[in-house]
Length: 259
Image 1 (tube, rainbow, N blue to C red):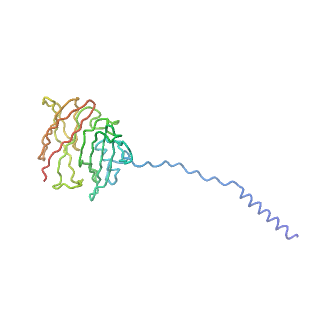
Image 2 (tube, rainbow, N blue to C red):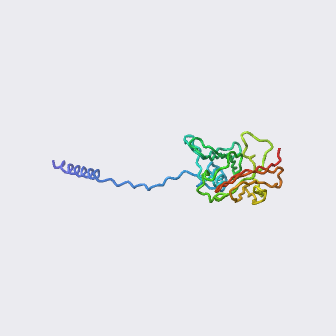
Image 3 (spheres, helix red, strand yellow):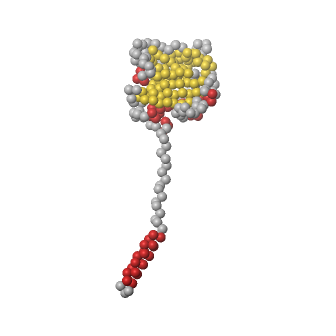
């Protein structure tokens, strides 16, 4: 009996030690630091400099060329009444992107009464050119960036804005259009605006991107493009009506003579 008693005492002490460890509260796990979700890239967050390798960068370059499109969303086939949208697709074989943009207005829940569409080509170095442009002139409030009117060419004023381009660039037009053959902007072209009597009331010169703006009172005007150096064909005169508080837009097409 004397040999068993110390053994029993040792076993009892070991059992109490194990029970004490099991009953002790576990050390709290460290609370993970809160991590803010990384927002999905948007055109306004995308750098508008450097090479263009993603659809977001291509769209950012288009918005830089036409700030009034700022705020436009991607095309959603399930969204009823979507007035304005964009689509971006790679341009086959040239490492560029094609950006299709649509602005609609007037009862868009039923499909929009009017619309204007652009097809832009964006090359890998970030150059933006218009492949095609169709539709009615966009009214001021229809622009996605209408709330940021101060950033557009017209600054929310009344007048005429336009863009001069020259084409064809390639001797053979392809279907679908090749972005590398898109019409190029005409810089330094002189644009004259005349009133109903034929008197010259404004004169503008196109910038590097081919755009111009003339601030005018509301009324009817005739826009004349002067011949541009190195181009064979000059656009004919265009009649333009300007409404109060609206910038009317036009396209001027020069002919390169390439056939």
